[in-house]
Length: 531
Image (tube, rainbow, N blue to C red; front, side):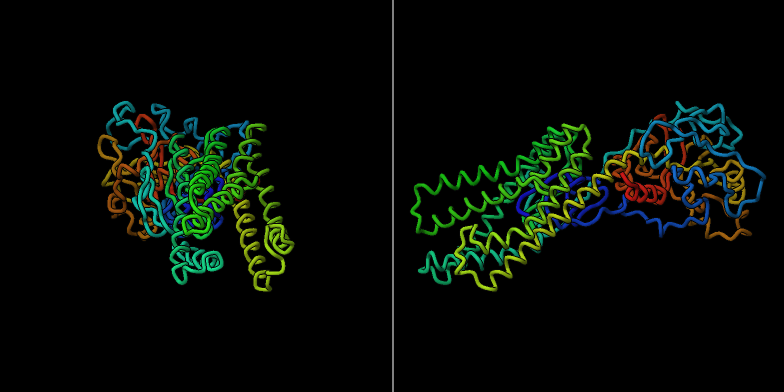
């Protein structure tokens, strides 16, 4: 719809999204897709093999599974060594609605006592383990690397460093505006003849230029608040600014939503002032009058107090401020948005038929009635869907902090490069671990043994296969901090798609291995849990 934009998290998700692209895909456009799984570009839960070291569900260390699944399940293919030590399953209390059990803040009791923070078994080399302070420090995650070209249509430019795209659907609505406005010009300026359609096309482009200014207002405000903006897209029902983060305070949320309609009102006033010295019955006069009215309509429509419109975000900010809970604001604004959708569906055709909008009821034909009803249905569907998507995305954002790398990490054992796979699996089974990290003689991590590779080695071949031949070399992006959580964790995994990641402490000491499939399962559970 014309010109609304908001943080991607609670807005009607656009066709871009990404997880939380949770983040916040934003805008008041109503044609957003459902949120995608969190780790874009990584294998999904259905495609990542889990026959090797992993044990389904229990590997996520979630509250749903911690009580029923034994994390010490032996590694397939490894010889049994009797009862294995149970990994640390301490549960933190006092955190409501936590879908993932925060267990790993305390060291596993069965691990090396001389390395209290390690989530791995002691290195098997004859020498003493490398001291934690001797290992390189690991920052709390690399900054997310945004795709160079998010796409979404024809790239028109990069004002303020944000790409602006024109979606293919814009050309359809531009043709529609040209046809409708051209018909009106035939009654007002009949002397134009066929040239009226050129004037109407200019109006369509100028109108969407005004919509772009509306979206740029949202973008500048977002950048002022240090919120990343993925792109601006002009499409069938207006424009959308895809803001990837949510405003941190209700005041900023209100400002972020209000600046768009405010700029539309200012543009309407500018066009009104420009009309004054211009003769009404001329092409410039008609164009200026049309742009004044259209911007006034854009501002008024977007100020309606229901999500996904800007007015809905302003209402959300007010309720958030009063209650102190963003979710309460989202629920209130979303239900008002749904009520607004029903009002548009029923009220718009009635207003047109009764002449309340200034139309002459005698000139209304059957085709006009059908057109009005169809337009009302489309607008109502857009508002209703956008309100529902806002609720769903808000619920996801509320649960995203529960996704913690420390809680989802699998216990790992370090093995040297030339260790036979059978011996490595025996050590993992004895330790109750579910991942293998290949290290050098000094205990420095070199690579991660891939689950899929282990499954592909027959059991009788495992004593003659070294772990180095089944491992994936570590890149900088495959090292993640154990302190990462929520959107920061998802952004880091998106930046370097992989099936497994090495999780390290801030000192650089190995904590364990994080599986992308485990993160995805936890993400899906967070989406499914009630508020």
